[in-house]
Image (cartoon, rainbow, N blue to C red; front, top):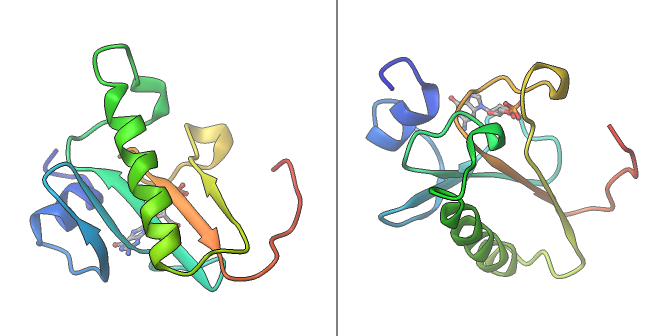
Length: 113
Ligand code: DGP
């Protein structure tokens, strides 16, 4: 998608602080961190949100979660971390390219929202 910020980050057109990259995914530090460690994990394939996951593409979700576990370990998040994926307007999704936030590095507030 030519107008997608995260596709531009994948293409190297917008700089990012990369944490991990392979042929299927990219992880980089959030530009507006909400915790001491705040990393975004995204597929290289453009998928707008969790609402577009089907039986044809759901394997990427498992793949990303395998990488999330590895990244959390590499980042030293041994005391725990949170994974968040905002989907759609009511959840406050601002970038319409599937992404998982990894948040950690300190005790996180317990909230439903
Ligand atoms: P969400 O609200 O779930 O759609 O989160 C989108 C996140 O993307 C938000 O926490 C800020 C981050 N973000 C937006 N633009 C950029 C960017 O250009 N670079 C980086 N590193 N993060 C970005």
